[in-house]
Length: 199
Image 1 (cartoon, one colour):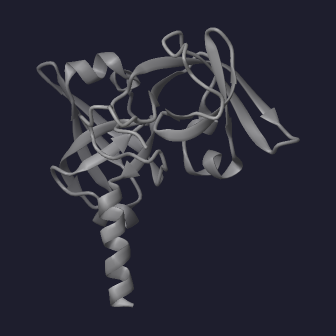
Image 2 (image 1 turned 30 degrees about the vertical axis):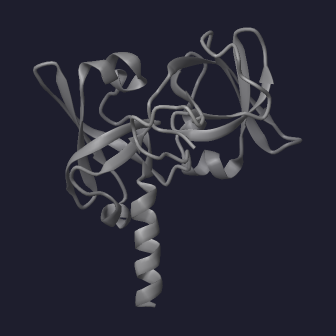
């Protein structure tokens, strides 16, 4: 369980396919995470993964074929930066919203426009998920908890304040960039319950 408040930015230092385990191993350089433990859950660009190896300044995670297919992690290369968040604890301040790290789909940056220091970002995505996005609702993009400013079928807008631009990878977004999207868990449960009643 996460909150969508990124703790630090890491850098991909190695990517390796492991045929014996049918997975990809990502090694991430992150000097701030010196107290990680094996088996710990960590969100990498919003994807909940398990720490499988630790060294003084890096840690490794394994990414299954299903996760590679559903997220943008398979397109990461050495030198790419990623948003990192450790799982919440009983004493964590819940400043974002409940984030599971289970990405629902990927979208793309459709347009970025500036208004003063703020950046308005339009995200295009599969319109079959349109009933899970609503204005002023929460959404997680590459692991960052954000508020939806406006929404239409197949596209929605968020605004990035300077703090978010500087402390996450979102400040480096360009048009066409792939984005991991996790919709609000409450909306997903409500949709599921309504579909059961309608069936």
